[in-house]
Image (cartoon, rainbow, N blue to C red; front, side, top):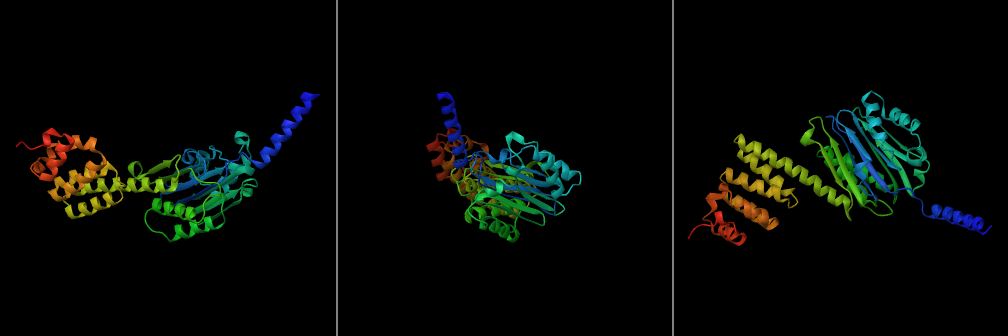
Length: 334
């Protein structure tokens, strides 16, 4: 009898705890969108680990979607396939919900889904349970859908929409700006941990973006830095192509862009220095090498000994760096 009574008390306590401390992973906001060139992408942030691993999906020329609150990762591949076959976002989402199968012990009441396609259609769904998370809801329009749950207020979603529609730049930059606007408007009620930016382009390969901050104190800020570094790398590659074509003024502008967005990425400063040497810009090369040696002295010791810098061997500043780092080949003989 005592065992039965004890079990009853424990079960009752567990029920109370579940009511007070729900197990659902609250607080996510996201935007999905496609542009007229066929690029499709997602920006998302949450107070959970590695949001980019299971929430966001996109396919160039087709569409983009998120599955959040209680994620059903089966929605991503199936949803994109439905869009690819010609289904509208609304019909695709309804098909996904109908075949949910109570994934991982949850139901469609705990799903929040946003979807947009390259034809400008969009749709969002927020389940009954998901809609109870502090503030939850969505806005969708021509080629985009913005959704969130566990947010400080409706202002998060409206700010995201306003900035996305007003901002310029690439689709990835517009998605990023929208996510930042959501955070600035209050973001999530229970904190922040991870963020992700996904972009699929018709060109594919290096033009695509799949960046993730899986756990950080300021995930959106860190995600923006990673996006900038993606474009810094793109700019330095463009500069290298321009140098090969003899387009030196254009190459210098591309280098400036790369360095501006580099976020102190040593690889960009190194490549900029090598490009400057190739163009005969030894003064600029010294400037770039100065930053590079400060960022990564171990790599710089090896780099300064490269034959490409032989014209600088007699330069006093260059020689001082080489001597300090022990780059013997680059140290001029007295």
